[in-house]
Amino acid sequence: MARNSIVSRKTSETEIDIKMNLDGSGDYSISTGVNFFNHMLESFSKHSMIDLDIQAKGDIEIDDHHTIEDIGIVLGEAFSQAIGDKRGIKRMAHAIVPMDESVATVAVDIGGRSYCNMNLEFKNEKIGDMTSDIVIHFFESFASSAKINVYGTAEGANDHHKAEAVFKAFAKSLKEAVKIEHDRIPSTKGVL
Image (cartoon, rainbow, N blue to C red):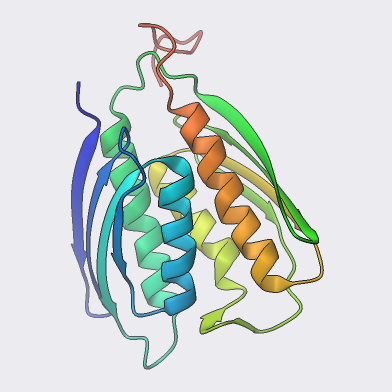
């Protein structure tokens, strides 16, 4: 069964179209209007092996908040749609990713409940052209609409390296968690 999705969202603040293939090869076409965020999503796609087409227009003349938040929401919806009933998936996984002086750890549970606990601190207000505090909110938005648990930490001196290590660790943990291991629902409840 193909694990694909197409999700769109249009508000007075943003217009977002996302296509996702969970069983891809890490191919991407990403345009968000926020260059550093494009870089993070491209890295996420490449390291998760999830094919992504993300085309977004937002009110970035105000700031990047609405655009990044809404992409998190729509990306989570696309993930939820693509994963389907979760039959056979590994469900839980984690990854530790170093990047130069930084290291990030991310654990996920595709268990049908939303929770996000990201322990991230950045020194600077901006990382490239992206507001640094929106990183945590992106993961909160994704976790909420995807109905997954996400836990993450990062340490290091360089904000760029910490953020990128977190996105890569998120990618690696999701790549592992979506793997098909058997033909059953991975829950004692019988449903996720």
